[in-house]
Image (cartoon, rainbow, N blue to C red; front, side):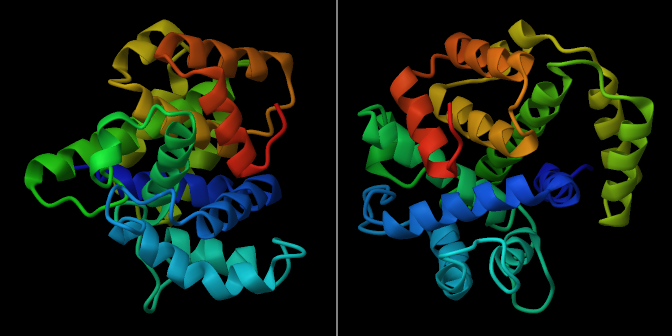
Length: 253
């Protein structure tokens, strides 16, 4: 069975250029500075996000002037996506999903739209406690990956060479044949934004997908900007929430 959390980690790790690394650094620094806001009603960040931020703390401090310097965001990214030793392993273990959940929760809270998440840490900030929660987290990871691939398709189909490169990177990261086949099939699918938006169950997950989309591409074409605008409109993301997400990741609108 495909572990979509691990596949998400592999997908981001294999495509995290300097721009994506810088945005991850901005998001982690923003969350580190605003732990009280990412509380989930518990007086502190959810357990998964707290673990990530604790591991990233020294590296982020050293990288305050230049988040791409040696030992800075590179170390954070290794910890976030699984770097061996005592580092947090894989997206489902806490890294990518915790970061995205934190960015989304903070954006929704600042916009006064945190909803049910205001009373408890949203899934992603806290560990899944039941098989049902584990399944929900896997579904979220799957939707986030689809969103990252969809924005990449917004200015044209992904080329066969690029598909092979991405799938090859996933294989190198230890993703099995089933995960590789799913990834290849999704990359080959033409973009259908209406169908994808219908899969998003609520604005909280839409906010996480939107944040992940800003990590997937540079957002430097009219087609990509139009895709993000339409995605926000179709999934009920308010302009205030969108602005907060851009601010957390340090991406101009």
